[in-house]
Image (cartoon, rainbow, N blue to C red):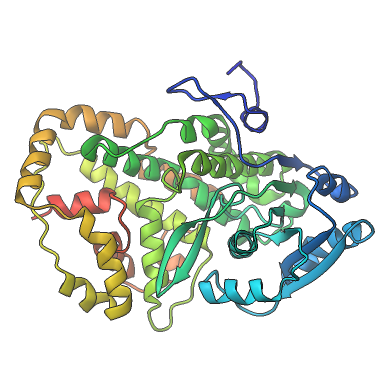
Length: 429
């Protein structure tokens, strides 16, 4: 790609070159607009997408006040708007999706989301179920799911990423985002901070197990991420230039997931840790924002990765000893059966353990060098989060003592995604 070419524009125009194949890549979104202010442009942004005249606008009380009322007022002169404002606490789960889908008018041509994380995930799934496109007006730079094809949904007691569809239009008013509550801004930084640990996990599964891996999700956002991490402190001072870097990093991370066909480049061991804690809901546990949790969990993964990558001698893989009864005993019957179905394909018998140990014996130095090259290390990651005042310890997000340690043991059991959590478990004796 020519020097200075904007990767977002190149993707929207279908001319971003895959660094491994040279193929020209195109984003599934048709429009991404990031400006200091979008006031007065709402109708133009939506009409450019040719969506039809009947829109269902989904928000909650806070996002409606922050931006939804303005968007509705602007669009109502040109569109028929069904206003849906969710009240109280709600989750991105199959029950809430069903309730939302039931109230959306049959004539709806598109879903317009005014909000961020949970609202975006719910709206993605509702739009998919109703067979119509989705547009998002962001209210907080809190997560990287705006431009991804995945949604984090809870069903049957297990939280996992599921396939949805990428919004056709995603619009960011930086002035609105800069006024978001500081925890939401820090959450976006936390969600961005896990790129190094997620890439290391994904690369490990590729090098050790020959699972598919792509570089493009990481080349896409490399320049913006580096600049963002250098200006983390400015994020919480209302600096729109720093906010633009955060939004661009989140957008490009979402596109990377879409190009990879899943959440692989941005959701690995650190997300398993966070999802595990959310599933367990210990008594008295107050759930922190997703991105705040991910920042803390990414630091835990970085420390684990640092320790394992520092091993001079090739690790030895041992046969798996965990059983179905162990998993059901820990998670309960319903969630335990679902977790066992995810975990069982990853388990290794004696022959497979010997094969992997032999591979490590000849390739460990090259393998760990390549993985280490994509990481930042726990010390730098902690400094970036601390610069913005983001949480860096379990205590700061209300996790009781021992909860993270429990997650480091059991979080690998909730999903068939091989990470350093598995590697640590299989090499530990």
